[in-house]
Every structure is written in C-alpha cells, then in structure tokens.
Image 1 (cartoon, rainbow, N blue to C red):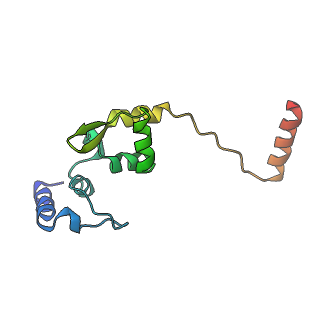
Image 2 (cartoon, rainbow, N blue to C red):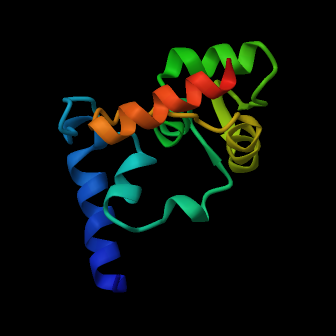
Image 3 (cartoon, rainbow, N blue to C red):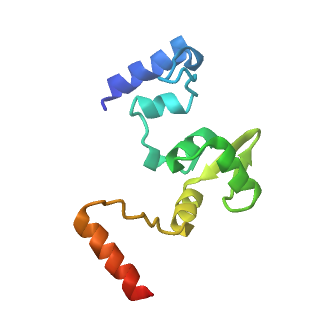
Length: 123
C-alpha cells in the first residue's frame, strides 16, 4: 500500500472517528481494527491482540476466551485497562488442543457394509 493511501486512510480515521465506522454486524471499529481493515498493518505484524480480536482469531467468543484466561489456560497481560493476549499464547493454546476426530457420515451401501464388517470383526 502506498504512503499516500496510508495517509488518506489515517486521515479518514482521524476525521470521521472510529465510532462512526461500523462493521457488518454494526459493532463500532476500534482504533486498532480500522488500520487492520485498511491493510495498514497485518495481523501477523502484531505482538498482541485485544480480547475481541483474539477471540475472533481463535473462532471462539469473548466469554470463552475470558474463561480460558481466568483458568490460566491462556495468559493475558494488562496495559492500563486494556487486556492483551500475546500472539504466542494463541499459538500455544491452539497447539495444545486435541485433533478433531470426525464421524464418518457417508451413507452409501458400500460404506454401510464396510462399517458393519468392521463392527463384526471387533466383537
């Protein structure tokens, strides 16, 4: 992104104010989220994330994230009133999760016969 576009984006942020800019779910953008949206800084460039961002990156809700922090599973730090979750903590948490084992939902006759044969062998 050119310096000119970055400067214009920053000017929009300062003039309009982040509270006036809305996302699709009508949540106001924070002063951190707008530069991300405009591509001024990438998520991988950040060392830590706010609660909403961290929960979004993990694909969980803020309440679940706060429970993980309260139980000591995910470490968070505070800068004044702001709770920040270090990027490495998110990576550690994801690495600690067990692999997802999905049930075979194929219902073709061949698959049914194979499953029944496997069950019969295991008994």
